[in-house]
Image 1 (cartoon, rainbow, N blue to C red):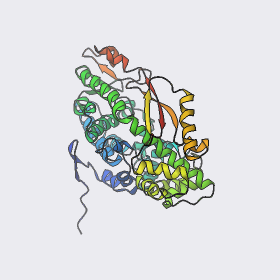
Image 2 (cartoon, helix red, strand yellow):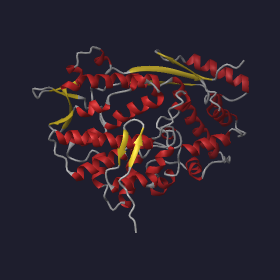
Image 3 (cartoon, helix red, strand yellow):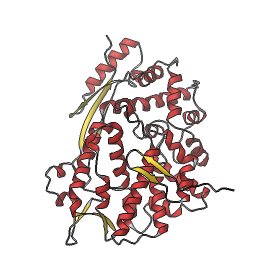
Image 4 (cartoon, rainbow, N blue to C red):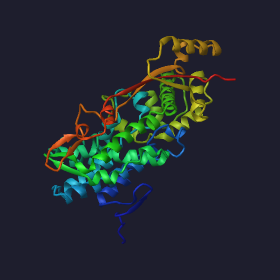
Length: 409
Protein backbone atom coordinates (compact mmCIF):
# COMPACT_ATOMS: atom_id res chain seq x y z
CA UNK A 1 0.00 0.00 0.00
CA UNK A 2 1.42 3.38 -1.02
CA UNK A 3 2.05 5.86 1.76
CA UNK A 4 0.91 9.43 1.22
CA UNK A 5 3.73 11.90 0.52
CA UNK A 6 3.41 14.62 3.16
CA UNK A 7 6.55 16.60 2.27
CA UNK A 8 4.78 18.79 -0.23
CA UNK A 9 5.97 21.91 -2.06
CA UNK A 10 3.57 24.85 -2.37
CA UNK A 11 3.86 27.72 -4.84
CA UNK A 12 3.54 31.12 -3.19
CA UNK A 13 3.32 34.33 -5.27
CA UNK A 14 5.55 36.19 -2.79
CA UNK A 15 8.38 33.76 -2.00
CA UNK A 16 8.13 31.17 -4.76
CA UNK A 17 8.26 27.58 -3.55
CA UNK A 18 7.47 26.88 0.11
CA UNK A 19 8.36 23.44 1.42
CA UNK A 20 6.36 21.71 4.14
CA UNK A 21 9.23 20.65 6.43
CA UNK A 22 7.80 17.62 8.22
CA UNK A 23 4.77 15.33 8.46
CA UNK A 24 3.41 16.92 11.65
CA UNK A 25 3.24 20.34 9.93
CA UNK A 26 1.47 18.72 6.98
CA UNK A 27 -1.12 17.13 9.29
CA UNK A 28 -1.71 20.47 11.04
CA UNK A 29 -2.24 22.23 7.69
CA UNK A 30 -4.69 19.47 6.71
CA UNK A 31 -6.66 19.87 9.96
CA UNK A 32 -10.16 21.34 9.55
CA UNK A 33 -9.40 24.22 11.92
CA UNK A 34 -6.47 25.32 9.79
CA UNK A 35 -8.30 24.77 6.47
CA UNK A 36 -10.95 27.19 7.75
CA UNK A 37 -8.38 30.00 7.31
CA UNK A 38 -8.88 29.64 3.53
CA UNK A 39 -12.29 31.24 4.17
CA UNK A 40 -11.10 34.10 6.42
CA UNK A 41 -9.90 37.19 4.57
CA UNK A 42 -6.54 38.59 5.62
CA UNK A 43 -7.55 42.21 5.17
CA UNK A 44 -11.23 42.32 6.10
CA UNK A 45 -13.14 44.78 3.91
CA UNK A 46 -10.05 46.23 2.17
CA UNK A 47 -11.02 44.49 -1.08
CA UNK A 48 -13.71 47.17 -1.47
CA UNK A 49 -10.85 49.67 -1.93
CA UNK A 50 -8.11 47.45 -3.36
CA UNK A 51 -9.74 44.80 -5.58
CA UNK A 52 -6.66 42.56 -5.42
CA UNK A 53 -6.79 42.24 -1.63
CA UNK A 54 -8.56 38.88 -1.75
CA UNK A 55 -5.86 36.85 0.01
CA UNK A 56 -6.62 34.89 3.15
CA UNK A 57 -5.23 34.09 6.59
CA UNK A 58 -4.25 30.72 5.08
CA UNK A 59 -1.79 32.44 2.69
CA UNK A 60 -0.38 34.54 5.50
CA UNK A 61 0.12 31.62 7.91
CA UNK A 62 2.08 29.63 5.32
CA UNK A 63 4.18 32.70 4.49
CA UNK A 64 4.98 33.18 8.18
CA UNK A 65 6.06 29.55 8.48
CA UNK A 66 8.37 29.98 5.49
CA UNK A 67 9.99 33.12 6.95
CA UNK A 68 10.37 31.45 10.34
CA UNK A 69 12.30 28.62 8.69
CA UNK A 70 14.57 31.18 7.00
CA UNK A 71 15.09 33.04 10.30
CA UNK A 72 16.00 29.86 12.17
CA UNK A 73 18.46 28.84 9.43
CA UNK A 74 20.16 32.26 9.71
CA UNK A 75 20.38 32.13 13.51
CA UNK A 76 21.74 28.56 13.54
CA UNK A 77 24.32 29.52 10.91
CA UNK A 78 25.46 32.32 13.26
CA UNK A 79 25.99 29.89 16.10
CA UNK A 80 22.69 30.16 17.98
CA UNK A 81 21.88 26.70 19.32
CA UNK A 82 18.30 25.68 18.49
CA UNK A 83 17.28 22.05 18.90
CA UNK A 84 15.22 20.15 16.34
CA UNK A 85 12.35 19.97 18.83
CA UNK A 86 12.47 23.77 19.40
CA UNK A 87 12.55 24.42 15.66
CA UNK A 88 9.46 22.27 15.07
CA UNK A 89 7.65 24.03 17.92
CA UNK A 90 8.48 27.50 16.57
CA UNK A 91 7.17 26.55 13.12
CA UNK A 92 3.93 25.24 14.64
CA UNK A 93 3.50 28.31 16.86
CA UNK A 94 3.86 30.76 13.98
CA UNK A 95 1.70 28.62 11.71
CA UNK A 96 -1.15 28.74 14.23
CA UNK A 97 -0.70 32.29 15.56
CA UNK A 98 -3.77 33.62 13.66
CA UNK A 99 -5.98 30.52 13.74
CA UNK A 100 -8.49 32.21 16.08
CA UNK A 101 -9.50 34.99 13.69
CA UNK A 102 -13.22 35.30 13.05
CA UNK A 103 -15.04 36.38 9.88
CA UNK A 104 -13.58 39.51 8.27
CA UNK A 105 -10.75 39.37 10.81
CA UNK A 106 -11.75 41.76 13.62
CA UNK A 107 -15.43 42.52 12.94
CA UNK A 108 -16.77 39.73 15.14
CA UNK A 109 -14.66 40.72 18.17
CA UNK A 110 -16.55 44.03 18.28
CA UNK A 111 -20.08 42.80 17.66
CA UNK A 112 -21.45 39.38 18.59
CA UNK A 113 -18.93 38.10 21.15
CA UNK A 114 -18.02 40.01 24.32
CA UNK A 115 -14.44 40.47 25.51
CA UNK A 116 -13.09 37.57 23.48
CA UNK A 117 -10.17 38.41 21.18
CA UNK A 118 -8.65 36.33 18.41
CA UNK A 119 -5.40 35.66 20.36
CA UNK A 120 -7.38 33.97 23.14
CA UNK A 121 -9.39 31.92 20.62
CA UNK A 122 -6.14 30.94 18.83
CA UNK A 123 -4.90 29.50 22.11
CA UNK A 124 -8.13 27.49 22.57
CA UNK A 125 -7.75 26.04 19.06
CA UNK A 126 -4.12 25.16 19.78
CA UNK A 127 -5.06 23.39 23.03
CA UNK A 128 -7.77 21.39 21.23
CA UNK A 129 -5.40 20.47 18.38
CA UNK A 130 -2.77 19.49 20.96
CA UNK A 131 -5.23 16.86 22.24
CA UNK A 132 -5.87 15.72 18.64
CA UNK A 133 -2.11 15.34 18.00
CA UNK A 134 -1.14 13.43 21.17
CA UNK A 135 0.20 16.50 23.05
CA UNK A 136 2.84 17.17 20.36
CA UNK A 137 1.96 20.88 20.33
CA UNK A 138 2.78 21.43 24.02
CA UNK A 139 6.12 23.17 23.42
CA UNK A 140 4.63 25.33 20.64
CA UNK A 141 1.89 26.49 23.04
CA UNK A 142 4.47 27.29 25.71
CA UNK A 143 6.38 29.47 23.23
CA UNK A 144 3.16 31.11 21.97
CA UNK A 145 2.20 32.03 25.54
CA UNK A 146 5.70 33.39 26.28
CA UNK A 147 6.28 30.78 28.99
CA UNK A 148 9.35 29.18 27.42
CA UNK A 149 12.61 30.41 29.04
CA UNK A 150 14.25 31.48 25.75
CA UNK A 151 12.91 35.04 25.30
CA UNK A 152 13.88 35.51 21.66
CA UNK A 153 11.57 32.64 20.65
CA UNK A 154 8.54 34.71 21.65
CA UNK A 155 10.08 37.78 19.93
CA UNK A 156 10.18 35.88 16.63
CA UNK A 157 6.41 35.32 16.91
CA UNK A 158 5.22 38.56 18.53
CA UNK A 159 7.37 41.68 18.80
CA UNK A 160 7.96 44.93 16.92
CA UNK A 161 10.03 43.10 14.33
CA UNK A 162 8.46 39.67 14.20
CA UNK A 163 7.92 37.14 11.45
CA UNK A 164 4.20 37.99 11.41
CA UNK A 165 4.84 41.64 10.44
CA UNK A 166 7.57 40.71 7.97
CA UNK A 167 5.07 38.59 6.06
CA UNK A 168 1.90 40.68 6.24
CA UNK A 169 3.54 43.95 5.18
CA UNK A 170 5.13 42.38 2.12
CA UNK A 171 2.08 40.23 1.30
CA UNK A 172 -0.51 42.99 1.77
CA UNK A 173 1.66 45.36 -0.27
CA UNK A 174 1.74 42.82 -3.11
CA UNK A 175 -2.00 42.08 -3.15
CA UNK A 176 -3.09 45.71 -2.80
CA UNK A 177 -0.50 47.00 -5.26
CA UNK A 178 0.64 49.59 -2.70
CA UNK A 179 4.39 49.63 -3.37
CA UNK A 180 5.19 51.70 -0.26
CA UNK A 181 4.77 48.60 1.91
CA UNK A 182 7.18 46.40 -0.05
CA UNK A 183 9.83 45.68 2.58
CA UNK A 184 12.96 43.57 2.09
CA UNK A 185 12.01 40.77 4.49
CA UNK A 186 14.85 38.50 3.35
CA UNK A 187 17.45 41.20 4.06
CA UNK A 188 15.94 41.82 7.51
CA UNK A 189 15.98 38.11 8.33
CA UNK A 190 19.58 37.77 7.16
CA UNK A 191 20.58 40.55 9.57
CA UNK A 192 18.98 38.90 12.65
CA UNK A 193 21.06 37.67 15.55
CA UNK A 194 20.70 36.90 19.26
CA UNK A 195 22.47 38.71 22.09
CA UNK A 196 21.81 37.97 25.77
CA UNK A 197 18.80 35.85 24.78
CA UNK A 198 17.21 38.78 22.92
CA UNK A 199 16.62 39.24 19.22
CA UNK A 200 18.83 41.93 17.67
CA UNK A 201 19.52 43.29 14.19
CA UNK A 202 23.13 43.63 13.10
CA UNK A 203 24.29 47.21 12.47
CA UNK A 204 24.51 46.84 8.69
CA UNK A 205 20.78 46.03 8.63
CA UNK A 206 19.72 49.36 10.14
CA UNK A 207 18.57 50.87 6.83
CA UNK A 208 16.33 47.87 6.23
CA UNK A 209 14.80 48.40 9.70
CA UNK A 210 14.23 52.10 8.92
CA UNK A 211 12.52 51.16 5.66
CA UNK A 212 10.41 48.59 7.53
CA UNK A 213 9.18 51.18 10.07
CA UNK A 214 8.42 53.79 7.40
CA UNK A 215 6.60 51.14 5.32
CA UNK A 216 4.54 50.21 8.38
CA UNK A 217 3.48 53.82 8.94
CA UNK A 218 2.55 54.30 5.27
CA UNK A 219 0.66 51.00 4.99
CA UNK A 220 -1.47 51.88 8.00
CA UNK A 221 -2.58 55.22 6.59
CA UNK A 222 -2.84 54.09 3.00
CA UNK A 223 -4.30 50.61 3.48
CA UNK A 224 -5.23 49.35 6.97
CA UNK A 225 -6.75 52.65 8.11
CA UNK A 226 -7.98 53.76 4.68
CA UNK A 227 -11.18 55.67 5.34
CA UNK A 228 -13.33 53.55 3.00
CA UNK A 229 -12.09 50.26 4.52
CA UNK A 230 -12.64 51.75 7.96
CA UNK A 231 -16.22 52.75 7.12
CA UNK A 232 -16.98 49.36 5.57
CA UNK A 233 -15.68 47.44 8.59
CA UNK A 234 -17.79 49.61 10.88
CA UNK A 235 -20.82 48.77 8.74
CA UNK A 236 -20.18 45.01 9.12
CA UNK A 237 -19.90 45.45 12.90
CA UNK A 238 -23.22 47.33 12.90
CA UNK A 239 -24.88 44.69 10.70
CA UNK A 240 -23.97 42.00 13.23
CA UNK A 241 -25.00 44.13 16.20
CA UNK A 242 -28.35 44.92 14.61
CA UNK A 243 -28.94 41.27 13.70
CA UNK A 244 -28.18 40.23 17.28
CA UNK A 245 -30.53 42.93 18.60
CA UNK A 246 -33.37 41.74 16.33
CA UNK A 247 -32.86 38.09 17.29
CA UNK A 248 -33.00 39.16 20.96
CA UNK A 249 -36.41 40.68 20.12
CA UNK A 250 -37.53 37.21 18.89
CA UNK A 251 -37.38 38.27 15.24
CA UNK A 252 -36.37 35.36 13.04
CA UNK A 253 -33.46 35.97 10.64
CA UNK A 254 -32.16 33.51 8.04
CA UNK A 255 -28.57 32.51 8.90
CA UNK A 256 -26.26 29.52 8.85
CA UNK A 257 -26.41 27.27 11.90
CA UNK A 258 -23.06 28.60 13.19
CA UNK A 259 -23.94 32.27 12.73
CA UNK A 260 -27.41 31.69 14.17
CA UNK A 261 -25.85 30.25 17.32
CA UNK A 262 -23.77 33.40 17.95
CA UNK A 263 -26.74 35.65 17.22
CA UNK A 264 -28.99 33.81 19.69
CA UNK A 265 -26.50 33.35 22.54
CA UNK A 266 -24.50 35.75 24.69
CA UNK A 267 -20.92 34.57 24.37
CA UNK A 268 -18.04 35.73 26.55
CA UNK A 269 -14.84 34.13 27.85
CA UNK A 270 -16.69 32.30 30.65
CA UNK A 271 -19.21 30.69 28.29
CA UNK A 272 -16.68 30.05 25.47
CA UNK A 273 -16.35 26.30 26.07
CA UNK A 274 -15.29 23.48 23.71
CA UNK A 275 -18.77 23.26 22.16
CA UNK A 276 -18.72 27.01 21.39
CA UNK A 277 -15.22 26.60 19.95
CA UNK A 278 -16.46 23.84 17.65
CA UNK A 279 -19.31 26.07 16.47
CA UNK A 280 -16.91 28.99 15.99
CA UNK A 281 -14.70 26.74 13.82
CA UNK A 282 -17.61 26.46 11.35
CA UNK A 283 -17.99 30.23 11.06
CA UNK A 284 -16.24 32.17 8.28
CA UNK A 285 -16.62 35.06 5.82
CA UNK A 286 -19.06 33.07 3.70
CA UNK A 287 -21.58 32.83 6.55
CA UNK A 288 -21.62 36.62 6.93
CA UNK A 289 -21.84 37.42 3.21
CA UNK A 290 -24.60 34.83 2.65
CA UNK A 291 -26.54 36.22 5.60
CA UNK A 292 -26.21 39.82 4.37
CA UNK A 293 -27.49 38.80 0.93
CA UNK A 294 -30.59 37.36 2.63
CA UNK A 295 -31.00 40.27 5.04
CA UNK A 296 -31.28 42.75 2.15
CA UNK A 297 -34.90 41.57 2.06
CA UNK A 298 -35.43 42.11 5.80
CA UNK A 299 -38.43 44.11 7.03
CA UNK A 300 -36.12 45.98 9.39
CA UNK A 301 -35.09 49.35 7.92
CA UNK A 302 -31.68 49.40 9.60
CA UNK A 303 -30.58 45.83 8.80
CA UNK A 304 -31.89 45.99 5.23
CA UNK A 305 -30.08 49.21 4.38
CA UNK A 306 -26.84 48.37 6.14
CA UNK A 307 -26.64 45.13 4.16
CA UNK A 308 -27.46 46.88 0.88
CA UNK A 309 -24.64 49.33 1.48
CA UNK A 310 -22.06 46.55 1.86
CA UNK A 311 -23.30 44.13 -0.80
CA UNK A 312 -23.77 46.87 -3.43
CA UNK A 313 -20.74 48.88 -2.24
CA UNK A 314 -22.85 51.97 -1.72
CA UNK A 315 -21.00 52.93 1.43
CA UNK A 316 -21.18 55.78 3.92
CA UNK A 317 -19.36 59.04 3.45
CA UNK A 318 -16.26 59.00 5.68
CA UNK A 319 -14.31 62.09 6.63
CA UNK A 320 -10.99 61.99 8.49
CA UNK A 321 -9.97 65.00 10.53
CA UNK A 322 -7.02 66.00 12.73
CA UNK A 323 -9.37 67.54 15.28
CA UNK A 324 -12.14 65.87 17.27
CA UNK A 325 -15.55 65.79 15.63
CA UNK A 326 -17.96 68.24 17.24
CA UNK A 327 -21.13 66.61 18.63
CA UNK A 328 -23.22 69.21 16.75
CA UNK A 329 -22.04 67.82 13.39
CA UNK A 330 -23.15 64.37 14.41
CA UNK A 331 -26.51 65.62 15.66
CA UNK A 332 -27.14 67.51 12.40
CA UNK A 333 -26.67 64.35 10.29
CA UNK A 334 -28.75 62.26 12.71
CA UNK A 335 -31.66 64.74 12.58
CA UNK A 336 -31.54 64.85 8.76
CA UNK A 337 -31.77 61.06 8.61
CA UNK A 338 -34.59 60.92 11.18
CA UNK A 339 -36.64 63.45 9.24
CA UNK A 340 -35.98 61.89 5.84
CA UNK A 341 -36.91 58.31 6.78
CA UNK A 342 -39.08 58.79 9.89
CA UNK A 343 -36.82 56.64 12.04
CA UNK A 344 -35.78 56.89 15.68
CA UNK A 345 -32.53 58.43 16.89
CA UNK A 346 -31.26 54.94 17.90
CA UNK A 347 -31.89 53.68 14.37
CA UNK A 348 -30.24 56.72 12.78
CA UNK A 349 -27.14 56.19 14.92
CA UNK A 350 -26.40 52.97 13.03
CA UNK A 351 -25.70 55.15 9.97
CA UNK A 352 -24.19 58.23 11.62
CA UNK A 353 -21.30 57.81 14.03
CA UNK A 354 -17.81 58.98 14.86
CA UNK A 355 -14.59 57.48 16.19
CA UNK A 356 -10.84 57.75 16.08
CA UNK A 357 -7.89 55.80 14.73
CA UNK A 358 -4.29 55.79 15.88
CA UNK A 359 -1.15 55.08 13.86
CA UNK A 360 2.00 54.19 15.78
CA UNK A 361 4.76 52.60 13.69
CA UNK A 362 7.17 52.05 16.59
CA UNK A 363 6.61 51.85 20.34
CA UNK A 364 9.70 52.94 22.22
CA UNK A 365 8.03 52.24 25.58
CA UNK A 366 7.83 48.46 25.08
CA UNK A 367 10.26 45.78 23.90
CA UNK A 368 12.22 47.76 21.34
CA UNK A 369 14.08 46.89 18.15
CA UNK A 370 17.72 46.57 19.14
CA UNK A 371 20.67 47.22 16.86
CA UNK A 372 23.87 45.22 17.50
CA UNK A 373 27.04 47.23 16.82
CA UNK A 374 30.29 45.55 15.78
CA UNK A 375 31.80 46.28 19.21
CA UNK A 376 29.00 44.24 20.83
CA UNK A 377 27.03 47.23 22.10
CA UNK A 378 23.23 46.97 21.77
CA UNK A 379 21.34 50.22 21.07
CA UNK A 380 17.67 51.08 20.44
CA UNK A 381 17.05 51.65 16.72
CA UNK A 382 16.01 55.29 17.31
CA UNK A 383 19.33 56.10 18.95
CA UNK A 384 21.29 54.10 16.40
CA UNK A 385 19.59 55.72 13.39
CA UNK A 386 20.73 58.93 11.72
CA UNK A 387 17.22 59.43 10.33
CA UNK A 388 15.51 62.29 12.15
CA UNK A 389 12.04 61.14 11.08
CA UNK A 390 12.44 57.79 12.87
CA UNK A 391 11.86 59.39 16.26
CA UNK A 392 8.66 60.90 14.88
CA UNK A 393 7.45 57.38 14.03
CA UNK A 394 7.42 56.55 17.74
CA UNK A 395 4.84 59.28 18.37
CA UNK A 396 1.20 58.21 17.93
CA UNK A 397 -0.79 60.09 15.29
CA UNK A 398 -4.52 60.18 16.04
CA UNK A 399 -7.14 61.04 13.46
CA UNK A 400 -10.86 61.42 14.03
CA UNK A 401 -13.55 60.23 11.65
CA UNK A 402 -17.22 60.81 11.06
CA UNK A 403 -19.45 58.53 8.96
CA UNK A 404 -22.83 59.44 7.52
CA UNK A 405 -24.93 58.58 4.42
CA UNK A 406 -23.97 60.24 1.16
CA UNK A 407 -26.48 62.82 -0.01
CA UNK A 408 -28.66 61.36 -2.80
CA UNK A 409 -29.63 63.36 -5.87
